Length: 143
Image (cartoon, rainbow, N blue to C red; front, side, top):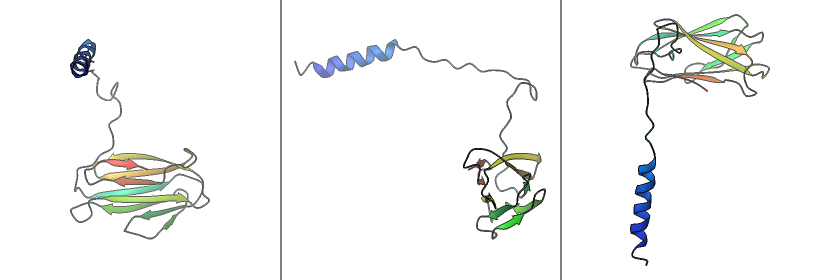
């Protein structure tokens, strides 16, 4: 009896797996700039770019480029710029927080080919957004 158990289990597994229909993927179509979703902001790895941090809140922000600057105050409406990229510093991280502890929300944009604009606004979840990481593969993470 125990010698038949592995064979019965194997046969049952094969029957059950064969009963499932494979899920088919169907390619969709879209017309550029009208029905396609937004493309993620991304840069060419190693490309030198300018990173702008724009304070669109009513309070003072503290902004710090990780391993690059001390915390710098950024007044409402002020824009702080950093240069990054090339083979010397392929990664870029910037950390920010509201001086009063209010939650923040980030919107990233690419208005020009070599410009990353980080717009910091009030709101978001209770913890809010706190940093932006430009990875060495050109992709961007908001943390």
